[in-house]
Image (cartoon, rainbow, N blue to C red; front, side, top):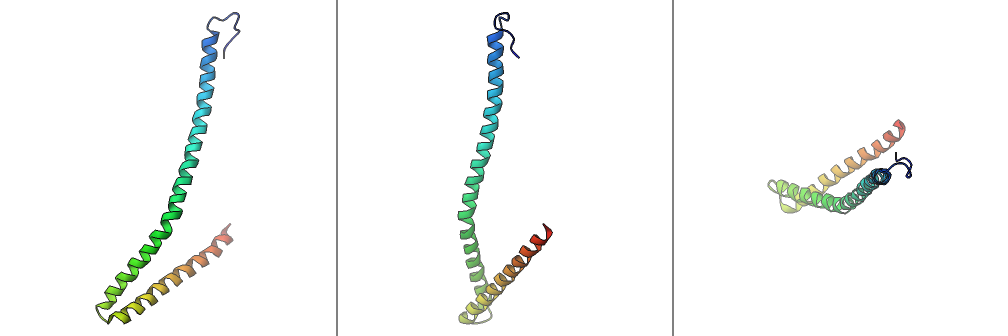
Length: 109
C-alpha cells in the first residue's frame, strides 16, 4: 500500500500500481460476467428459434421415410395413413412419458 506522499518519493508510482491492480480486477470481473450473460442470451435465442424448426423438419423427414418404407409393401394411400398413425403413436407415448416425469420430478424436490 502506498505510504505518505510527503516522505515517500515513489508514492505516485505505487499508488498508480495499486489503482491499476484494483481497476484491472474489477474490469475483468465485470467483463467476464457480461460476456457470460451475453453468450447465454445469444445461445438461448438461437436454441429458441432453431429448435422448433429442427423438430418440425425431423418429424417431416421421419414421416416421409416411414411412408416410403411402408410403400414397399402396400399402396401409397395406405402407407400415408399408416405412417401418420405410427408417428402419432410415437408422439403420444413421448408426451405421456414426459407428463409422467413432470409429476415424478415434483415429488423428488
